[in-house]
Each structure stands twice: as structure tokens, then as C-alpha cells.
Image 1 (cartoon, helix red, strand yellow):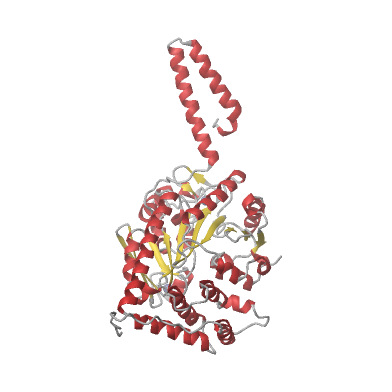
Image 2: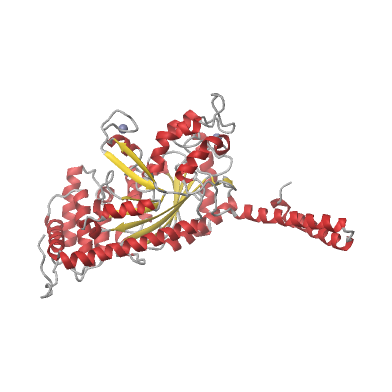
Length: 367
Length: 170
Ligand SMILES: [Zn+2]
Ligand SMILES: [Zn+2]
């Protein structure tokens, strides 16, 4: 079975729900693990990598939680298939660039994915919709415990799990959540939030886009330190910070609606106008406008549609997903045309946003 | 402003981050920020970048009298670490322990692991402790000429060794 046949459709994927998914799009926990007795993948000779891969792959496939999984060596996946896995956040960009001696094993529910011979021998992750860090930790902890029964890990009682990069040493854990924070961005409070969260030793960055730019107002919050704190302490720290960020975003939405409703409705109305009527649109512009449409949905401006429609458009307008829906190789310009066609088609049944009439006592503040 | 990494191109990506009250700043050009995965979706951390900048020098502090350390297990050297920002194998942590310590201190909350321990190791540690305390009890019993008690201890130790011998050292 090919990976495209194995993966759920974007529509199915976006219908998965979790706590607080209005703001937290997904929760993810990744563990880095290495085998005893083999050099780390980046330093290993190709022959060694192939040898370790042949030990690791069957071990992962044999785990009960990976029954019925998709398992493949990276060299057997096409560039497009790898890119689709990246766009689904199932593998890293780095892993997509790997060839012989690397691979992945993905469970049926797409909630557990093990990258083999990435930067470490194992990069295993649990992915859950919404805010479910404890659930993600439980799943990945179980997988890890099952795997350690069949394979000897490189572990030191003082330093913990030994990783190729010292930044991952100890727990080897990266706990992260993907947040949609349009109101904090519109209210120009995001920099302040980033600074405050940084002070707690956590990183915040745009999930899409280059450098500090955050396309689609989607941010990823994650721990940076992995040594000297336990996994549960790190998970709970993230939980605490995320709860505060959710509250800040909700407050920012309420404040914007109260103080600058016209500004908010203007942004959302224009976003709808372009998305539903453009004949050529880039991936970048699409993401930024879909973010506003998602905010519009949350504010009740699009009655009769599901949030999953907006989330699905987020996925299927990404370059590899768009290419995948067409047999001929597309240029960037051709993709922009097709993206616009697809958006117009999918937004046809969606009525234009209808802001509530402003209450008589609220001043219609101009921006 | 020049890029901190290649020191050739104009820096266009400026990163500031405060970790444990320490302010860290990195300025990068477009090419280097891409190469270092600043736009990557899973693993970028500033510590990673800083590794590339200062880690090699940190590690050198660990080498005695200028002769370059080399991992006996995998042949990895400090120069390799400087280049890759990654180590060669698990044994490298032992080989470069001295130089790594400062680096670990600067990027983590502590320098000792306090998290999960593989089950087999945890069990073997618990068993070792148990056998040790039984041995103490045994010696004490012998010293006090309490031979009945000593026999009980000896039986318990033997039983542990028989059933869990694979988990006990030596
Ligand atoms: Zn540069
Ligand atoms: Zn080594």
C-alpha cells in the first residue's frame, strides 16, 4: 500500500477533535532515543546505518501499538510523498531528505510515528488533536517502554538518554503544541507574549514561514531544556503556559470585538472576499487569509459550516497536497491558479460573513 | 551586520531568546538560517545554533595539553564536533565529558538526569540495592553470632541471584 492510500484524507484528518481545539490545533511529544553499540546516524557509515535500520525497523513493527502500521524505507518514497508527510507534520524536513538506511513506521490512527535514523536512531512522536499533552505523553511513554524491552538503549544513569545533539540529552523529550493566535497578532501583543514565554525557558516560533514570520498566525510552543527536569515536570510546565496563552488569546478576541469590531469584521470580510473570488493565490496569502476565516468561524460569522472545512483548506492548499491532486507536474504559477480554483469551489456553499448588528450602547470604534 | 555563522553575508534573521535569565542573540543570513533549520517545523532551538557557534571551543577546554581527544569507540574528534554540532556515538559523552559539562550547564536546567529510567535498569538497580542491604544484614548477624538470622539472609540472597541473576552485576 502506498503512503497516499494509507493516509486518511485531509477532511477525515481535520475532523479529529480535542480539548481547546478552537485555539490549540495539535499537541505533540517527541522522544529521541539511540541504540547502544551503534554510532549515531549522522556519523555512521552508510553500511552501519543500513545495518542498524535492519535491526530497528522490525523491532518497531512488532510493537502491539504499531499493529497494521505503514512501514517504509525513505528511499522507496517519492519526493512528493515525503513532502506530504512533512505537510501533515508526521516527519521532519530533515528526515524527508534522508535516503538509504532511514525509514518511518506510522500507526493506523496516524497518532504515533517513529522516524528511524533521523538525527538519532529513533525519533518517535505522539500527535493528538487539540490540547492533550498528558494523553500524548502516555502514548509515547508506552511505545518507548515497549521498545526498550526489545532493544538496548544508550542510557547513562547520570546523563539519561544519550542523544546525537547535547541539546536533547537526558529525557530526549520535545513537548510542543501548535496554536492559532490571530487575535494576539491583530492586537499586536504577540511579541510581548513570546518574550514572557521565552523567559520560562520555552521557545515560541512561527510554524510556517521563514525566520520570525508566522504565516497563518500559527505558532509552536515547545520546551528547550531536556536535562535536569523530568518528563512530567516539562509536560505540566507546558500545560500551565498553554492554559495562560489560551486565556490571553480569548481575552484578546473579546477585547477586539468590544473595542474594534469594525477592524475585525473588515479583516474577516476581506479575507472571505479574496479566498472566495481570487483566480490566482499563493500558498502564503492563502494561509494568512484562512487564519482570518478561522477566526471568523470562531466568532460565529460563518453559521452552517464546520471548522474542519477551514482546517482542511489549510492542508489541501499546501504545495505537495495540491500537486498530489493533479497528475501533471505543476509550476508554482500553475499551483497558484489551481489553488484559487479549489478555494472558489470549496467556498461556494459558504455564505459571506454576517457580523452581528452592533449593540446600541457599544460605540462602533473606527480603526 | 554580518551573519554570525558564515561571517560573509548580511544578517537578515535576528533571534533573541532568554533562557534562564541569560539573553542570547544570534544574527544570521538567509542561507544560514535555512541551513540551520530556523524554518524547520520540529526541532529548531537556539541552543542548537549556539552549539554551532561556541560549542567547538567549549569542547576544546576538555583536551589536555593540546593533543586532540578522539573517541576510542567511533573515532570522533573535537574538530568533528565543531563542524557538525553533533556527537559521534554514546561513548563520546564519556570521552568529551570534561568539555561538555560547561556546555550542558549553559543549555539545560541541570546536569543530571531526573527523568525516566529504562525499566530493566531500574529493576537491576533496585535489586542491587536489595542484595547489598541483605549482605549487610548477613554480616551483622554473623558478627552477633545470630546464625539463624544469617541463614535466612543467605537464603534470600541466593534466591534473588537465582531468579534475577541476569539483572545483577557480577
Ligand atoms: Zn550566513
Ligand atoms: Zn564516539
